[in-house]
Image (cartoon, rainbow, N blue to C red; front, side):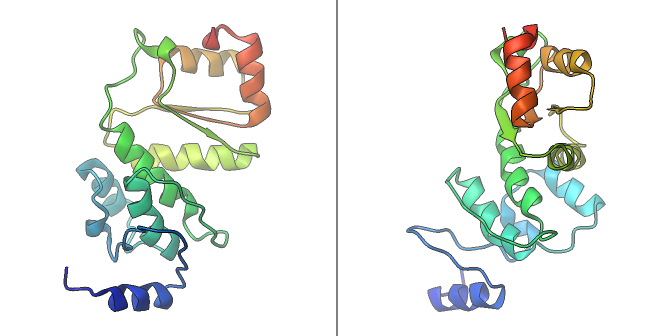
Length: 177
């Protein structure tokens, strides 16, 4: 609350954060300002994440408001965590998906162009949901279609997939019927 608009502009300049559009929330300066659930904060502490990166500083507040964002940042800058943490925070507020509700589908879907990126996103999701009831699965080529279909039928809150394998599952498995 002590920060003026000029202070926020200087902070963004110092962290090379460029924004466009109206009503963009101020960035977070530390994890405590991120308004993240205690379960995520516990994971952040256990993973020894000291402070948010530039993309995380600005993307997390936008994501928490469930607003659209296009974020550009170099490889290794924390983009995956920047968009995953608001998703995890939101999913934590919803009723759990279980075998009775699994056919209603996952609450979230992340489609990514490569299996490597899908696996990275899934791995990061698992790290940050270690203290929650949230579940995810990844469906990509090179893994058992039957096992992937079984995981979907059991119920997950988030599905991470490549386009081709998702299309295959929609067209050829009972998971989506």
